[in-house]
Image 1: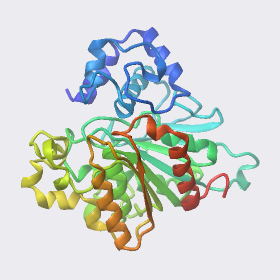
Image 2: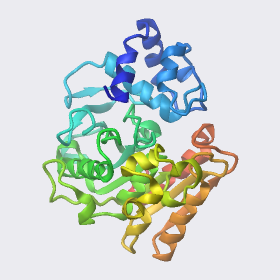
Image 3: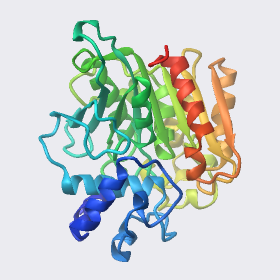
Image 4: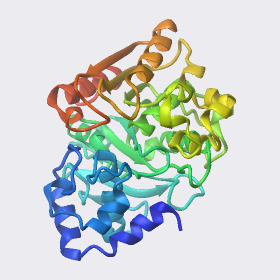
Length: 366
């Protein structure tokens, strides 16, 4: 049984009252500092907390909580996959949102799926303008995590953006490049179905944190790079390019992470299928910097200077490579911030993200 399956199974151990309280309070929640009270609800029983506490600090950070929420959603989800519903259990999803859950974009039953949230527009359908789309790609060390409720990207719904949140194969399912193959397949599927969904195929952005930050950076720099396209899904001839990238504290050059990241059992080594320093060719293939070119989309990178997991220097490496190629890039140092946490939910941080996507993709105020 995979770790994700164990986590999902474990949720059945949680009393229904606790699950309901967590889900109800999650609707209006934002990412928050590590804790053992998701969305301010009742504490998680220790035996359950242990299963979701990936870093072993006795609390749930934003990414770990996302995995917990996804397991809860699986526990209480209703409706057929891919069928539209309105509103729902996701966090901060406006009531007038058309929601498509667990849409399959590839053959893997649970990992090749996405959720899509599309704001309903006023007026006649014939007058509706296709909406820009931001795709959220979750973190979790490439070995844990799930699409959850779309992460912080769902805040964009109120600003006239459609939002998608995707699953992809984890390192326990398949090693790299399966993860980027899946991300690109999801982009292609959404683009191929854009008319059906009312989204603009020429205004796609991606946003992700940690391992998701690595993957969005790779999506951004490797648009239509044949060796990373893969053959997942039914739309292999459709472009996987995006027009904007927001990278939250993602790794870039895995060989320069140092320390425990070089261990044979590190998340990076599990991603590559072998110890980092013994597989430098795979490291280069997984490095977004390898594919940087002048036609890459604009980047916004936000990273805490006290990050104990992904060194701040990883984002500096990416910024320098993008600047050298004359790609528009802004690196924002979040002072005092660790690996995620409350600082990334501060109004100023969120404002920068919103204004970045508005400038690159448009939105309610374009």
